[in-house]
Image 1 (cartoon, rainbow, N blue to C red):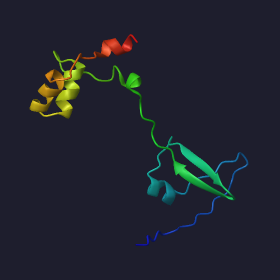
Image 2: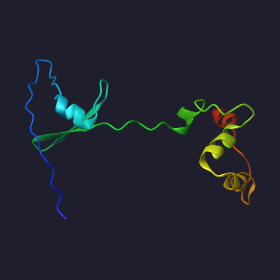
Image 3: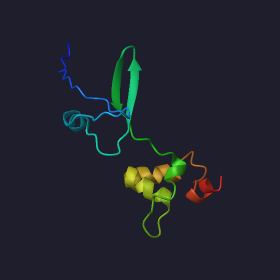
Image 4: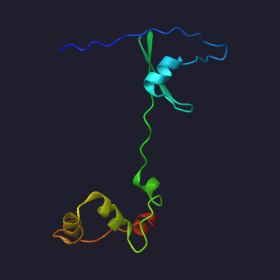
Length: 109
């Protein structure tokens, strides 16, 4: 099966500071908003312009952004969101469970 893509050509002018304006049709098609970063890929004599993907936060960056309900540990809260009650009990108390890692333990590493 052959995929046919529509190619649209836009001509822009480079300013004295090396800046170009991304045409509105391109911004709309790619969902570009103010502040979004773009990657320029130089390939031979052509340039490919690609929206930069948002960076995923590491676990250590995310610590502290989770606020579990009163009386619940972060682990219980995450488990509550991810698993049905029966699965949650097996995951927290089933065979092979050696210990629970607390967020406070990770912060002190």
